[in-house]
Length: 306
Ligand SMILES: [Zn+2]
Image 1 (cartoon, rainbow, N blue to C red):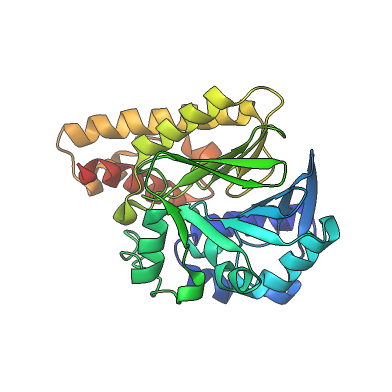
Image 2: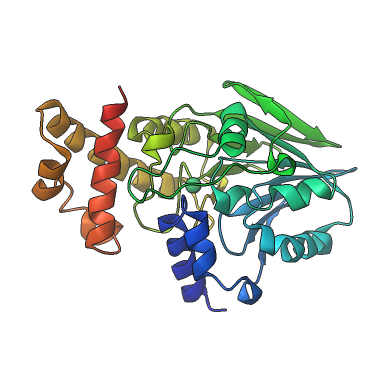
């Protein structure tokens, strides 16, 4: 599979990030290949279809971040076995979306403990609120798919022999249960979908606690922890550097400030979309008019939350 095709698929995954069923209908999983990138110090990025995966190998086991879709379990497992024969002890979820948690149940059955911010457990157990743009709804997930080692905001550490994952919750960003993970011994940061490196606008799941202001808080935290050598595993898209975060932050802040101003002036969602407040950004960040409108609507709806 060419890089171009992979990039196109990653973009599609972003658009359908909250519509697992839709994504599954559009993807032939039998054709998906898992690409492994060595990030140094026994840490790897895996890319197939869905959210990017980070794998950190210790002396007695493996920490894995995100699990893509259930039908890809065997391929992902085989790719990890090529790296190490040690067991996957922990599977960390960055957020509840099906393109990041779809493999929870099969990896849990293999013996992995699923770790997440507690809002993920709640959303997976009960099903989410219908997506604010598409109405897509994820049904309640079986017990095997639910995180059993959860934390309530703040931070948490997950360890295997010689390796430590630092988990941090950022409240109300892409969803209400986002975790970003830093492996300081490898200088690797996994952002989940609070940062995507597809060159396009992302999604804000505003009916499930997502908020543009949280996305800015998240990127500010990443800029603090990063230096020019940091390897950043984004939710979707290519491995990123600090410079990519800087460009991303500028887009977020411009979006936030312009649309918040219109919101505060009492403009309706329809009026704001019609005003095209991001007309100068759209040619770079939107794949098409629909994506441009969707981003404006998601940012606008962030301010309805409070
Ligand atoms: Zn997502």
